[in-house]
Amino acid sequence: MTATTQADRYISFSGIDCDGNAKIVLERVVALVALPEYANCFWDRFLIRLAEADKVGARKADELCLACSNTYYIEELFEAAGDEMGLAALRRLEDECC
Image (tube, rainbow, N blue to C red):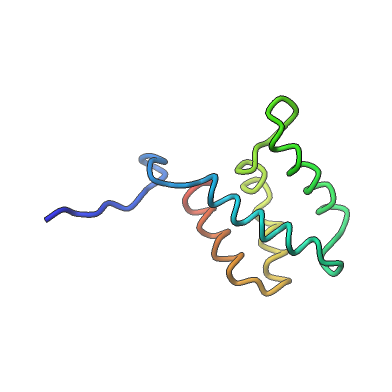
């Protein structure tokens, strides 16, 4: 019988898809801030930084760093929108990767 081991970021990030987790969260952010009721100057700037995240030479932060460094704002957005799936994805990102 083999025991299954749960991925633990404090031991190794092996088996944890941090980039995938960040992408899920960021896709939900982009969808929400496209709605007028959630759009504001902060999210406008966030989207600019997100677009820069793909440009290796020009970027200041990749998608994972951008998501992890803005978890409080993202959580506030998801709560305001009642986005339970977004909140769950954000918790997973925080627990496993940030």
